Amino acid sequence: MAKPKPSSAGAKPTAAAPPVTVHSALVTYTSMLALLSLCPPFVILLWYTMVHADGSVVRTYEHLRDHGVLEGLKAIWPMPTLVAWKIIFGFGLFEAVLQLLLPGKRFEGPISPAGNVPVYKANGLQAYAVTLITYLGLWWFGIFNPAIVYDHLGEIYSALVFGSFVFCIFLYIKGHVFPSSSDSGSSGNVIIDFYWGMELYPRIGKYFDIKVFTNCRFGMMSWAVLAVTYCIKQYEMNGRVADSMLVNTALMLIYITKFFWWESGYWCTMDIAHDRAGFYICWGCLVWVPSIYTSPGMYLVNHPLNLGPQLALSILLAGMLCIYINYDCDRQRQEFRRTNGKCSVWGKAPSKIVASYQTTKGETKTSLLLTSGWWGLSRHFHYVPEILSAFFWTVPALFNHFLPYFYVIFLTILLFDRAKRDDDRCSSKYGKYWKIYCNKVPYRVIPGIY
Image 1 (cartoon, rainbow, N blue to C red):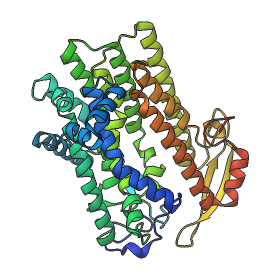
Image 2: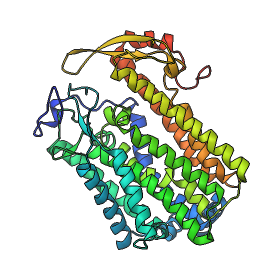
Image 3: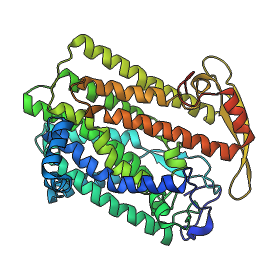
Image 4: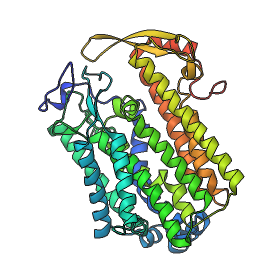
């Protein structure tokens, strides 16, 4: 699985340091309970509001008020059906096969806290192309109608809510009984272990990486598939696709294409390289991404708004610019790391800090911290164009209802919290070098403001 410190599949979960939680125990327990108790019903309420309540939060509120919260929720919560399970397992199996069988270049991730180097097969872009071509081909030749997915969307979300919870239990047990590497361990608290995860790089066998599957091949791929689904559903309902839906779908697909083009870079980010595979990240990728991230398009299915050529083109170009800047930020940092700082950043040699740190095994390592280019503006500047991209693919919904903008608000909170967690982690890792870095790049996210 890794080099130069390969880990045994039979390693005990206590072989490595326990999961590090940046937040306090109170925050951890509160967020855990919120995820368990509020997020699952919110997914169903969002689907119901978008599909059956014309996108109106007021209408959904009136339903719950008139019937009582529990009875009202029970009345609208669809039970998982055989059709829903077939769609989920069919899609999941298809993506798992592509992940295993499609060719791809070997890619080595960053050195883990235990000194391991995870090895991946970078075939995400190929899997993305095969998935969309297959999906559109099935529709074009009349073999499968994507509108069926939309028609059973509530049942699919309900199945994902329950099925993903069971999957997270499996991850918890696996982390205790047969971890994949020495980058695993228990905090001694069952709630924290279940929530934050036991393993950093869980695998089934030698080659099937679970986090790559949940985060990339199921979560991100389902986002693209559902974006196309909403577009096709609107076409079948109205005989045409409104320019608002076209802009929304185009920007989402451009963003997701950028993601899979850069997928190996994602494997070096906090989601993969630092956050363990637990309820927090895996349930989110399996349930939250297909529902919340796709919600602006879900809203537009029943709201074929006409923006007009000038406004539609302006939003499209602005969104594409933000996606490009987001990509260029990540490309700049990845190129800096790949060349060990021997590259050009905005036409000149990069400014950097050489920082040393120790692994959990006491080995001294060094890292280069980039302090010029996009990364000289703020320590997490790439989050700014990412949030703006989400705004631009949501704004075609205009402002008749609030709910389509929930994703933009959620993403802003998520990324600002992630920036803080990453800063806290880096401060602990690099010590005095991080203080020097923060003095040189004083703003966390928004230059001149925060």
